[in-house]
Image (cartoon, rainbow, N blue to C red; front, side):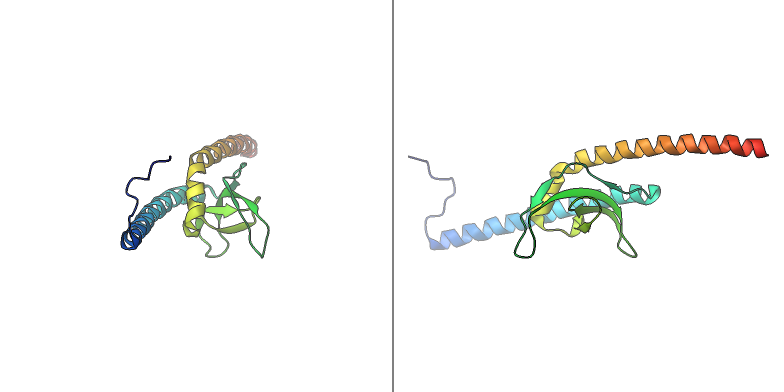
Length: 151
């Protein structure tokens, strides 16, 4: 026979109290998750702003189950500069750059999935930036040599 879970409520009043405690804790930890993601997003956004280089991760971090209005889709993290006053930071995309929403403003279940992928996403973005840095260095050196000939 399976053992009873520790702290299992005995009656209706205890069940309601137990439910309310769990709900408060979920909200508390969800708020902590949101605060941490905002801090990470701000830091990543500063790098995106300096480089002006956008990037979409190569592997999905989760799946949006879909609904009556659309099918399920794989979700990716992307470093984006929003159009107009759209902001700068990490967005949730469904592949490529057809962006859906900012990570900081998405549902808690999506945040929970995304946070597990952030270290790998960041490593991939840094590798992408290193490649771009090497490209810019080579082009700048070639341009300097051409300019030296003219002067």
